[in-house]
Length: 284
Image (cartoon, rainbow, N blue to C red; front, top):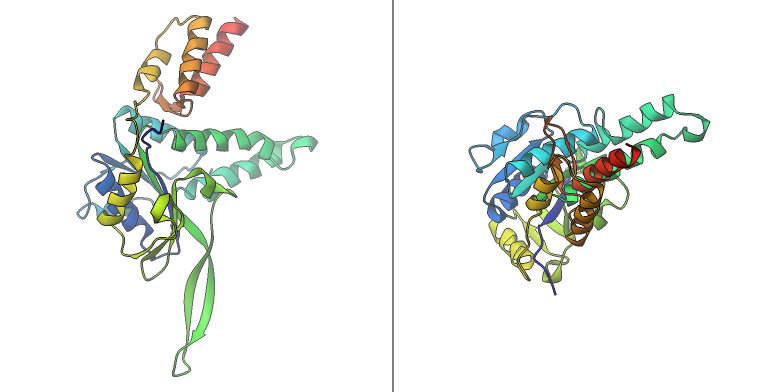
């Protein structure tokens, strides 16, 4: 039997394509309480008078664990929709995945010179938290850019920026329900989309597109957010058998990636935390 889904929407485009504006337009139409994880060093506040949303503290350190912790805070505060703008910062900016790989390769042994064997689990943990968020997630992605010289009808040559491949892990589009690319005319083209939205093209998309996406997401049996499992996982003095049962429940409800805020203010995922507590009891 089909269940309702939380939206996973990914938008890429070059500077000026309108991905941030569109992400906010979709988010505020799909969700009631919207939080924005601002990876643009405060620039997201320019839209505060246009759309109703709450701004997380701007991020300047883009480690995978930072994004997991911010998602955990959003989940704990009950935001039903989160915008990550842009998620590619956690791949290519300071302390992001690629930076972590470089550092790991410098300190690694001969068998780990690429650094990926150390960093890949961190990247997967971040992705699990994004996909496991108990609400809608809309993320923007920066593009690799190319400058093209084009003559006009008078022969005057102008430069135009075009977006090439999105900046992020290979195959990232497979993990999202709705993937679209945008250009300087603010035209959205759906690259991956459900049902009759496949191949959809729209200029200046907003509430109408959001309504079509939400209609598809709302089909089926209502979802039950795994907040009860998160509360149970944080209960002290759980026995090993209780942790095993809790993990089974998390797997049955596809909740292993649920972002979990720990008492010390850091974040992890439900599955990782249960496993860690189980290993601690086993070693003791």
